[in-house]
Length: 446
Image (cartoon, rainbow, N blue to C red; front, side, top):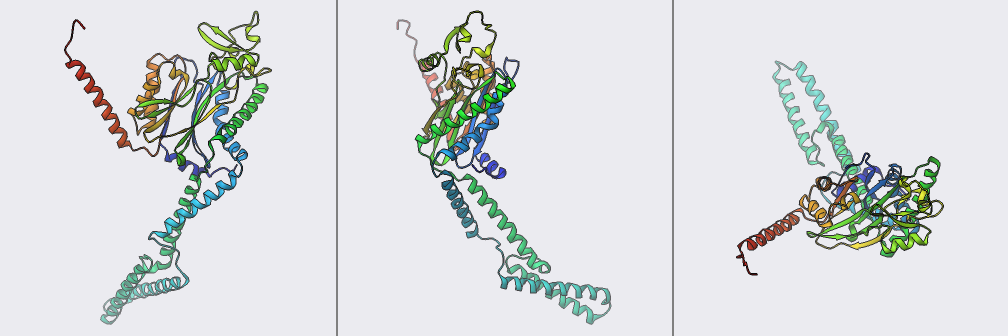
């Protein structure tokens, strides 16, 4: 699939307000990674890649997953490339038409060029004669009168130049207009390129899951091949969203136990399901694949036959994972795929009171509930990086033992003033409820 120009992709990415923050917490190393990139023809892809046992898998996912999704969408959806090409060309033409319909310099016609060139030549000739007269005409009333006449003519030429396409200096009448016209034409081309980069294609909801699942499975195979060569045993969870701005939808993608939450008003709507080994669905799948779910020190973990064998060194953390799905983790993928690399994919319609999306790793959700996470993000609406920072700091203050990472994406159609009003109304309601509670008489026999 053709990649978008970097400048155009960056311009589209900058249109949507987003921010992220991460901290190693009480662990020795920071193994999480974050992502936010514009996928051509699709929308904004953002997420948290929660590494465990090392950083190789999270780094690999960060570098390759977005482009893998972009590629598989193009390859698996019939006619996608052609539809995207048409959408980009239409967007470009529309933007150029909007630009040329407004006032501004355009490239002059042949006749206008001749007129401007004549003015420019006359002005240059007048300038030359005036300089000659200045050199020899002092003390001569006749030559001074001729110089003044030429100076007046020069002023007239400046006025004539100004009337034609906005030229200012008659001595550069044509070049001034051509330069302004070329600058405008370049600005229109740039606007057209940005409009083309923003063009998207509608995709049926049912087509997202197989296309994205293919991207994950192929990425997992590629990473495992590299991990086998390099003896890497680490893995990474993935929790991401793809914002379909044109359709007001959010595609949520989850692999593991990180979480995506939508702020619906001041409430929290969970957009993903944590994939833990102890859940009934995951436990059945793991056991059917030949794996086991065991309780180690109060934490349910997925493991292989080797992990439950007699005399196995249980300090080998890569054999006992508290997640059911991931990228990597070759010791639980070879030869038996105890863990799955197939993500849960959902398409969620967004409503008018949906404000933003937050993606956090399990280090955050271990100590903060969804409502607290959303409250911190909404409280700082308009400053998504500060929202992410506040979430991470609050989690750490609550004694989070793991890496703590958050990504916040504010929906571009949401009015910040509306959010402030909703927030103020909620605070007022809480204050009023507390006041009423304080004013109620105490009934000692109630």
